[in-house]
Image 1 (cartoon, rainbow, N blue to C red):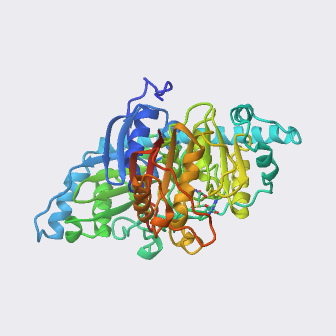
Image 2 (tube, helix red, strand yellow):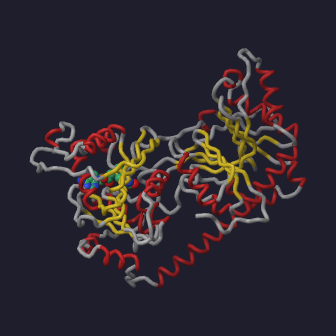
Length: 517
Ligand SMILES: C[S@@+](CC[C@H](N)C(=O)[O-])C[C@H]1O[C@@H](n2cnc3c(N)ncnc32)[C@H](O)[C@@H]1O
């Protein structure tokens, strides 16, 4: 979708976003599609782009982790071995600092964007308050959504009444999403009137890994800076005098050859001293107006200012997080959901995939299936919290015997259990043939299957799909547990389209897309 609210009266702004490993391609596609972005450039873990879209749009990107205003993008510094730290510092300052106007211009742009973001947040709060009031007024009125009616029509034989009776209801619980710090805040002591020297441990980068996906609060990187207090900052930085008195902090990440001459901490000091000299700015580790992030590696140099306090990947509309939202969104985007589609997640957990899909596709309807009452309870709370109760339905059933007619579903999207959390509970390798064959059965011809699997399960799936009719007795890995019925599995109608390896934190997963022929 190309924007119609791009503004011709504003210049294009150059941004960059961080992205999880393997998510860069999804983000490139998203910025082109939603923001009509230009000069899109991808490097590992980051996507750079220019856009004249309103900042509200930019800050709603779904595949990104965090959003920055780009200050500088440069070729890497290649210093000869044994370069002295003094020489390295000099080269660094002359390459990175540039002229005064570049910095003040960037701070003005940042300040303007902060003001717009603050205004949007206030508008969102007012809308949410109004919506809450209306919901309270309408309490007691059971509204069957238009979408559900469509669903009923399309899947008459489905046991809709069963879904309804099994829909779980419960009160909201406190959102216990935890956030972790990502940026390494470095000691600028000695640069300029620094109030406090922080221990590196207190601010060390900590990307806490999730152990596979389900039911865990995924870790979101957190910035500790003044981005959120933007209206104050904007007022303060709106005049020329104010621009001469900016307080700042530099967070630096450095790798490769440069890190052998100077540590990240030393680079922060060098850049901080240079900025103070060039602009009269004051270093302040505790409560700076401006935070500057510097990434220096053998591949690139990037300087940027964070635009939002919380990562874009932290979804305000999700109460309990399961699978990383960025990955859930990416899986939904691969399913190419169209208006009127019925989309099923047969192992939905707390429903992250369904929420991400339903947020993006308002004219489709969704069914989540899970065998676990606790997961369904949380999924139901999540749907209520996200106000998706009328379009996302939940059903307690097994993915090995789905109570849905054959060829009744347009897309199946599923994050199968694997990794430490689920390995001990069930033997997925043994159950995979039956689960896949159920997914294949309910899909209509032309329907899409998107699955997230471990590398091991991916190899097994590939094997299963190349066997003509999968007989689990011929495959020891896929042998069903004793007592379970042995049967033939017809999977050859699933045609592989594409695969992506993505990071789930501690482990990697593979997203595969198939189409039923
Ligand atoms: C990896 S989790 C799904 C996580 C989900 N994507 C989320 O964001 O919460 C896998 C889910 O499969 C469910 N499950 C395990 N065996 C099942 C079965 N036979 N039928 C249906 N669900 C099952 C588990 O209860 C768990 O919620």
